[in-house]
Image (tube, rainbow, N blue to C red):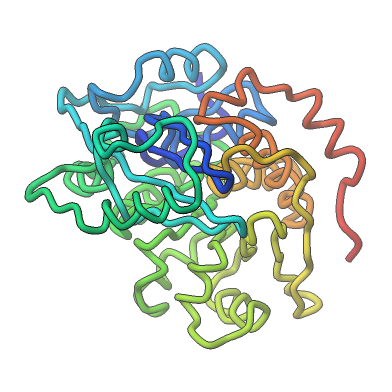
Length: 340
C-alpha cells in the first residue's frame, strides 16, 4: 500500500531546555519524525525514509507506527549513540543547537535536571562550549556517515503524491528527486545548513524541481545576505518554479505571491508553546499535505501552521499523537485562506 505522503529525514534524540528553563532530556524526535507527524494531522498514513540507531527509543517508534507512520523506509543500525544535541531556547524563540553531550552530563555537572535558572542555563552553556571529546559520534555526524538512499524506499512508495525532503546533503536530495519524480510526486524541501550555507547557483538544480521551498528566517538570510525578507524571497523565487515561504517561528510565515510580487503573511496558529522543537519540521509536513490537497501555497501554509501548533504544545515527536484530524480540519475551516 502506498502512503499518500512520504517524508525523508532523520531520527534523533535531543536534550531540550525550554525558554522558561524547563529541561526535557532524551526527547525522541528528528526532522523526519516531526515532519511525518505534521503530515499525519491531515492524512491517516505517512511513509518515513530514515535510519534508526539502536539507541533510538523503541517506544517512540512503536507509537509512530501505531498512529500512522509507515516505517517501511527505515533502515536499522546496531550502532549505539550516547551523545545528543542540546536545543537551548531563549524567550524570543531562538535556538542554540550547536552543543552536545550525553544527557547524564547535566546531573554530573551538579545542575538540576528538571528546571534551570537563567544563570544555570548560562553556566551550562559555558560548560558545553568548553567540552571536547575526540571522536565522539553525534546523531548528525552519524547521519552524514550513513546517508539515506533510494534503495531503502519500498517500491510501491514511488507513486506517493507528495514527498518532503528534510535537511540533507544535496546529493541525497537529488537522488530522492530522481527516485520519486517519475511518479509525479509534489516535492517540498527544508534547506537546513546543508543547502543554506551553499551558493544559490550550487543548489539551483534542487530549487528548480521543488513545489515548495521552506527555509527558516536564519536560513533565508544566510542564502541572500543583506536583503530584506521580501527581497530574499523574491531572489529565491526567481530560481524556483514552486512556492517559496519563510518560517518566522511564533510570528508565522511569509509566502511569496508571484502574481503580486509581494510577501503575504500567514499567522501562526494560537497555542500554548511548551517546546518549539520540531515546529518547523511539522510545519513542512503540513504544507506538503496542503499542497497535495489544494495546490494553493497560502492555504497550504495554514495547514502547516496548524500542524506546528500541535507539535509545540508537547515534548517529543510522538507527543502530539494520536493526531486529532477532525480538530485540525475544524481549525482550518475557521480561516481557509488569509486575505490576499
